Image 1: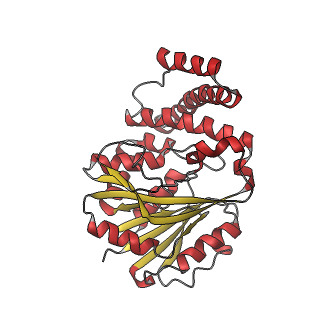
Image 2 (image 1 turned 30 degrees about the horizontal axis):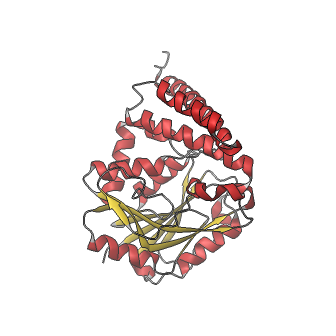
Image 3 (image 1 turned 45 degrees about the horizontal axis):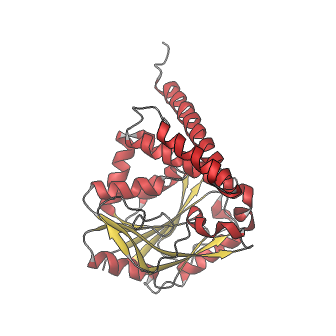
Length: 315
């Protein structure tokens, strides 16, 4: 049996959602003696330790990560955990009671597997817009009906960090990569930012180490989605940030050596979709271009910060 660590990385959590996430952990069929729990408080305005009781778990602790950013919080979890496997849970995720048991069995049966997530179903506080159905993946909904895995990049098998389980060797490799290539820290949300991409980085690390990655139907998770996250303007802004994240992932893969560019073919495709599309499709084209400009601005700001950090001190 593989020993598991669970980490919730949180910043200013919604407490009713956090309570349900913890209830999901309390209901796990895997005995608490076989898993530890880390609650990573990522620079919350009110310390999470004041509002969360972890006395129910004999091997649980709150770890404060003062550097704001989901990537910083996840890397802190990777430095702290003691298990053979690390499972990331968001503070608005509710695990099925057998989730950890299934993770342990899956990774024991599949030594080739480096990272995995599962079927993620939404619980909407308010119904989303009618047009949003095909785009649910933006908010980490995965209505998978068939397991898929691969040893190459494929959106059908690429796991997401909501409920992601990864091997210790993958976590350790990601920590090492963040040291040798600090551009990794540009990925993911920071505070209220809607940037993403840290899940893609983790998946790529697993693939580089020769593992497969996948999405598996036996892993079930409920994603609690508040009303504000299905408002049209929020969704369009989210899509802009997702597009920016895509550019940033490519930039990170190259360790920041090349500037972010938009090729003429991409511009032609965007122009065609803008002319031929409906109102929603035209708005998405606009957000894609906004995302390109946003990515360039983020890289410029980040590069400036790094130059300030590395400037020699005056005598």
